[in-house]
Length: 83
Image (cartoon, rainbow, N blue to C red; front, side, top):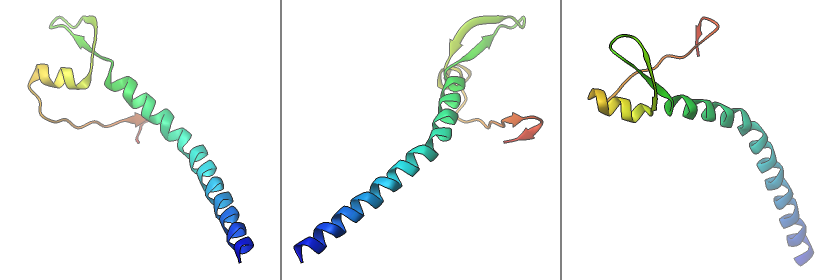
């Protein structure tokens, strides 16, 4: 009986390890996507009234606070299609 339980535990551990391995390999593209989103969120450049780039990076939260905004909508395009 104990051998059967140990064999079942080993099988369960192997299955969970395989699931974890597969889920980690699938999550990589999402990680790159999240990194890209974070890079954009943290690098919003202010444009002066004359249309010049100030060269000063702000976060989305900082720009929204400076402009008194409580929300916004964003559309992302790739090769002419909304993604």
